[in-house]
Image (cartoon, rainbow, N blue to C red; front, side, top):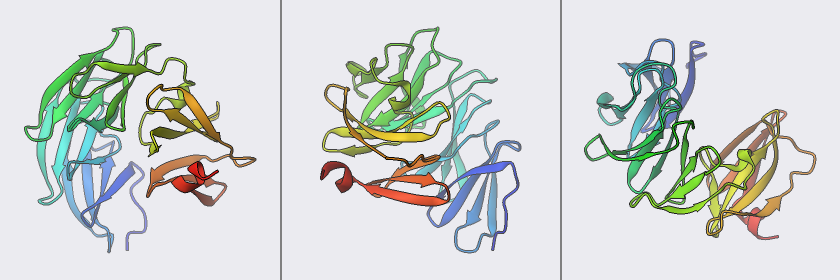
Length: 250
């Protein structure tokens, strides 16, 4: 049994019977057996990896200070590829999303957002934002959602043409990660200044306007997750599940 992880190992994900944990300080990803907690492998990745993500059957790390993305083959427990697209230094890859069959990655120190082809492990698409902006990328309903100063475009991942913009949404509603899509609506948690969830809101996928709200009454959640057709909220030691049916059958 694994009693405790080293303090620098903060982020992990479970894939193929293993838990993969990134280590910011040592620039490694450590594989643990999910059943026993036994350490199985230690793999070197780019400098200062942040949260590992699962996509296209493998684990990927955003190597924040290396300016690269590392792909780990979860079947062989080996590094399959390292894709470099930003000059090394502070402010490398930070956000990601999967759309149009590509892994999209943005870095705050460059106006370029790249799409990595999982078949070739090479940059296949790029789109630029204003040089004054620090782009944030996410993927919702197979669309690329960019946070780009006051433009906030939503792009088709194949043509890279704009299909709308979210300029009037509160900043906390701009998707920067996972979301719950129900009946052509994107449900996201809205956060207050203390980064505490104060409500759930729906954004229409055609107009990108806020069209619905799910009140949380007096509950204030400090953690939010999306999965199993539900939104999960952590509040004062309790986990609440709000299924999609609760959002629609009202």
